[in-house]
Amino acid sequence: MIEFLTLNSLSLHVKKIFKYTFIFIFGLNLNLFSGPFTDEFAKCIVMKTTTQEKTDLVRWIYVTMSFHPQLMDLSNLTADDVEMVNIRVADYMTNVFAYRCNEELNMAIDYEGEESVYYAFELLGEIAMTELMEDQGVSAASELFIDYIDVSIFEQILNY
Image (tube, rainbow, N blue to C red; front, top):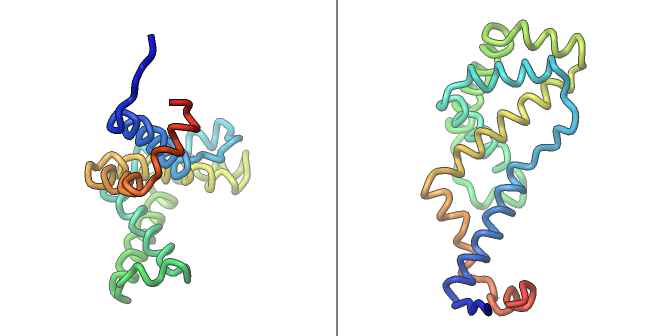
């Protein structure tokens, strides 16, 4: 049976491809190795981090990235905005390291090295980004570029 794709159905197909690619790129987990202690630390910070704290972390990433010369023109952050985001993340990190997950942190570092902290926060960042992408507005905004794609090129690539 030959399936004829309309522009809308092809657009939906292309949208899915790009959406999955976008999620893969931003959710890419380079954590190729994590041992049992790192896993326990990661589980601790994921379980003991609130939704608001995950949002604070994503906001901190956004603010930090906005300092890149190629992104500065897209941001109108004030010094107070930057300071507040940094204070919130510092409070969060202090609480996680010193109180909530101190035992798991120390075990991970003792047995698997300081990289375990990087791996655990990579996982947390991945989860926070996934939660952010689930918002309908963010999801819709992540697809806006599709309106500017030449669908005929993808018809050829995908043999439609």
